[in-house]
Amino acid sequence: MKYLPFLLCLFFITVSAQEKSGLVTSQFQKKAANSSLSPQVSYYVEINNGGFFKNIYVMTTDSTYSPDKFSIKIFFNNGTVRTIPAAFKKTADNSFTFDQKFASEDEDELAALTLNFDPVKKELGYRWNNKDKNDFSAPKIIKEFAYKKGNKFPVIKLDLDNTKSWSNAKKKKVIVINWFYTKSQPCADQVAELNKLVEKYKSKDVEFLSVVWDKDGLAAFLKAHPFSYLHGIAATQEIYDLMGTAIPRNIVVDKKGVIQYNHAGVGPTVIDDIDKAIEAGLQ
Image 1 (cartoon, rainbow, N blue to C red):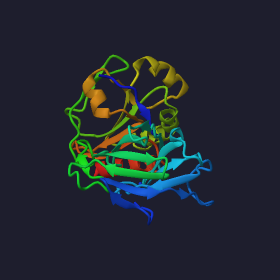
Image 2: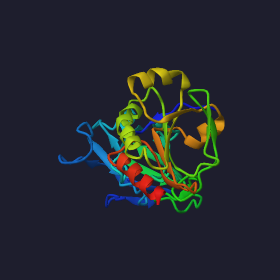
Image 3: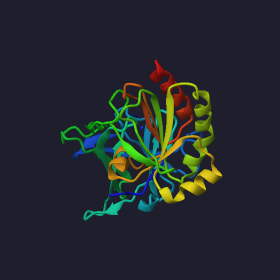
Image 4: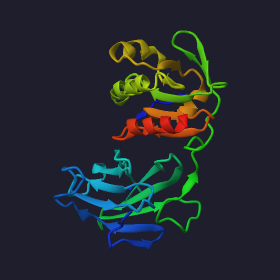
């Protein structure tokens, strides 16, 4: 089944936090004037993320704690920041609850986070739904990401936009892959810098391949954003499953077929990280 992509481009608990009834409970803190949170934020709670991220905050922009004004803000160690609306639902005891799935920066699947907001006490409770039900204060890995750095990249075959086919089956080259969506501005913003990498390594054993999510938008995208990669078409569920729903994604595979880099989203170091991975792959 083909899903829509999402564009891409959290460890300190307040001293009032307590563990009770299967939840870690915390009182909301008033945002300091010099906080890194957005100016609209009034109150927040920091969630214990077990060291998988830089910070996770549950925030509200409303001093009356209206349940529809909450969001989760995730600060990644690579400088990326993501905000998720917290769609709380009212429960039978008049509190509000919300569940959110998480993946680590290495894309390992983490235990889901459950939030519970008590509007009377102005108190937030949370638990990480680990396999061990008694271990809920910080997340654990539920499932490791199969295509992280150091693992083998699978053999794939796909059609190029010029009707030829492409496969990595017998290539003894470093392969650099960009997974993109033609209507994504973050994807378009990376093209110029990716083209510079193509120019830098044009005399080396490096092959650059883009894989486009939506074939119908490719011609218009390339007209607006000339892209020096080969252009492959995602036409099978295997490719969609391999590349995932997060875009843009950049992957570097060395001459032995081992993944040197696999990152979804954007960030200030992405291009430099791709460059370093190519150099490592050429060794």
